[in-house]
Length: 359
Image 1 (cartoon, rainbow, N blue to C red):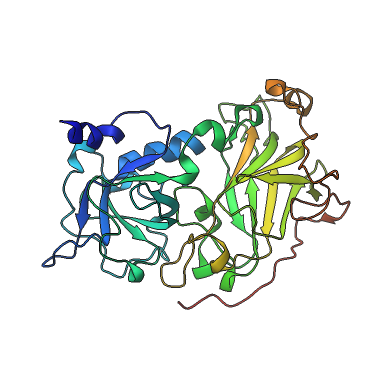
Image 2: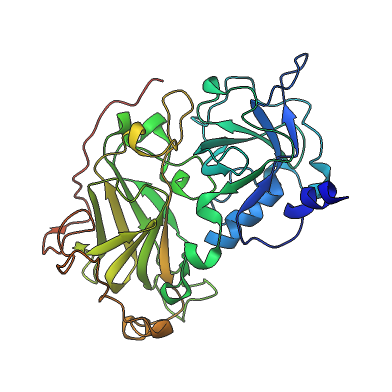
């Protein structure tokens, strides 16, 4: 019937729309489901994540079928037997956070996504779960993972694709002492200690033996064009640095629109850094809470495999570095980035240190 057809909407390979169907409601053993918590197919979310930011590398989707088991989505039609003890958090990194909209209620907020004891089945709720309410979710609800609705908008073809990183390093202290690898989409995300400054370095160089790498005795540069984040566009105080050929990090100008931080000029490099001066939990759209944990996500966008900066400027008919932010100036100042000759050496950091939150 029609209801069955709707339930199967997330069983095919179509990742456009970023939709996830609530397969069942979850409740602790011995209690009646009230709609506070839901069950979902982890393989469906894994497909959405991988379609946008590429397949797993050393730090992929936190609920990967490689760690939770692999099964057909049809098996996700009943609630799992048990899940992690309530209240749920992702402070230990075992789970993911994403911006989600429930199409029935139209609520948009951060959601916790965690594994259960059943292979291929996850459980979720709004972040934090202590504030969950009856009828937050119903079986059959369509949820939209807002930052994974379309691979072509996550990483526009003219700008390349999400680049594999040999390493992601937290330069500042992070909330709950999470490592830099958790900044990937599909993981718990990062905030600064006590929700203050967060700075991450991405090693985007190609290893000599990588499939896209030319013959070389040492890692080779890629072309970086943008960074993709789920931080709200109005979150202020962002800075981007690109490592130059002398091994020095140089601040670069960029523009932010719909989560895409596009460099005014693409850059050949082996590493990039991004800094958010403020990761206040009240300003990040529910991605991080004191009770549930979580944080922002960032991916580096660009081209690997011997592309040149000159060629990138003309990809798809887009002339890079000439976008206008519409405010009547050249966009070189303000929160979109400031063109500067200030350089940071390899060992330098402007990160503030602070205690880790105990919550």
